[in-house]
Image 1: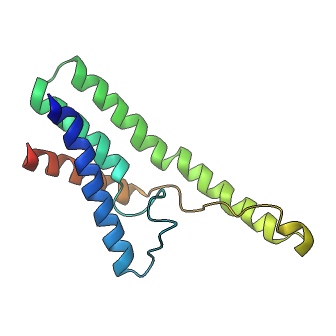
Image 2: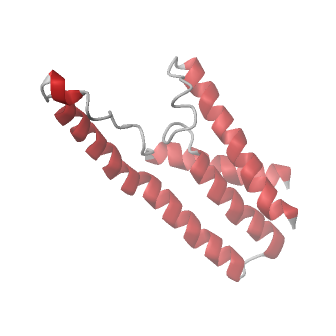
Length: 137
């Protein structure tokens, strides 16, 4: 039973580690962004697809699997859609802040703009979540 909890967490951490290595290779790594949102591959997609996969491997096509698939769809959709809107809003707000007079600009923090994932980042995270779960299982 521990596999249902432990595997998705471990796989999410492994995929997040892959993301950090990719950022290091691309010279985009920073400690402040190391545990933020966005980037290749999506550890969120890996987490939920791993959960759905381990539930399927443990219980088959039952109610629990159906629930995890719905959860997976919601998380992946929000990582692209909702967080995409948040990224766009952050970019606009940061531009507005930079356009303020200098004595006003410092009053507002710059917002994180790298929040959303692309379809490719989500797809690769999801595939890694499924494959790594099957390999570990």
